[in-house]
Length: 285
Image (cartoon, rainbow, N blue to C red; front, side, top):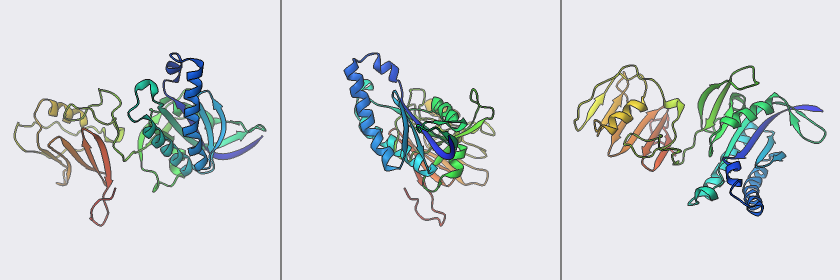
């Protein structure tokens, strides 16, 4: 048995057990065949090695952490196109987790070790349609190729240390995951991003005027803004930092946020993120 440092990916179909409970054996076979037809070519494209198939799951290794994450992004893009306009039972929603570290490789090619165990734990918290990965992947990947968002530290059963988790920051418009994830107008909106859920330094009152300017907010509180919008207190609102730089503008049902060198546009159709050029020019997609 030899040891190597590799990126490890684990994928599975969300709700697979529930889906199979309502299908015949031939229908289950058809589902898995379609799943394999969609996923395996993408893994091959990014030089991944399928270690084994576990029911609806793939355990895959990569020489490159960047290739592993790009593969995950490509898989989710493939599934997004496949699921378009399909009913719930006909969709194939995949969860993807990636970790990097030393693994032991058996004579038959199977892999073992903490790196594999951590990947399995991350997959357990990953959301359908997303790519979750660990700090070890983040530190070893090419960050210019993969926009990411920090989720935070998580403590997993059987793992001594807390693990910092990240996810791919998708720049295409996305659909909401639940009715609870509503935008400031009360309509469905993209899933929450922990990086934006900062606590505000003070609670500021607002009047029902055509335009309101709020200053001195140390962070962006989506919860407060959403409640104010639902109550009709916010129609056209600008929110500024202490230095007077505008960070949030709400107008005609669209939210425009400037944060961490990015412009974030939120509408009823989803979210789009654009990077701001350092020279002050127009932001690029």
